Amino acid sequence: MLTIQNGWLMEAEHQQSSHFSVRDTRDEISLLVVHNISLPPGEFGGPYITDLFLGRLDKSADPYFDDIYQLQVSAHCLIRRDGQVIQYVSFDDKAWHAGVSEFEGRERCNDFSIGIELEGTDTTPYTEEQYQQLVSLVRKLQESYPLIRHNKIVGHCDIAPNRKTDPGVAFDWQHFHALLDNDK
Figure 1 (cartoon, one colour):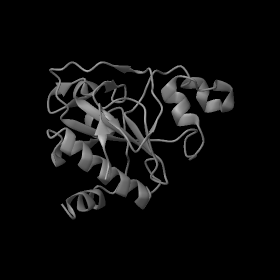
Figure 2 (cartoon, helix red, strand yellow):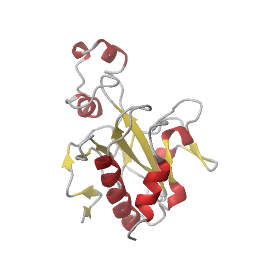
Figure 3 (tube, one colour):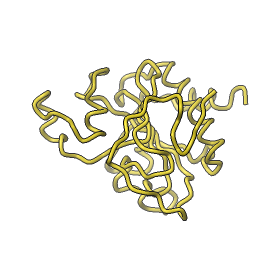
Figure 4 (spheres, helix red, strand yellow):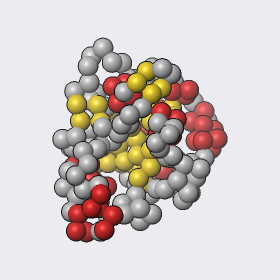
């Protein structure tokens, strides 16, 4: 059973990012955005995702990092391939995960959403551990933030369709929804 206290998932590893904004109390959390990330692209494990979200990515560690090491981005949580959860930003604050985005006519999705990164790529199948952990986390988030309904769980591709493709074709939405609906 997962526990959220003051916007923090108590069972997660906490790595507090400075890449966030205070959420306006009028912006009720009503959207959950599923992303993917791997650094360098297609490689799993290692410290680089956390380093990026904490603003300490060493550009000399990989040629790809030359273009991204100065980005100020974050997510609320990362779910690693083995199901481990790392939280970077309180759910009560705005992580900088969505960028230019729109959902149901509302722009600036960071204002009213929670962003969950899955360690992966658009075309690499996600692990069952990731699906199980995502479902557990979503259930707890829906309990704590009841405006996040099933139809308010979307991919980054859905809120920034001309810019983003994640979580990609490898994410099995049917499997995810079946797990989410099971044993309620």
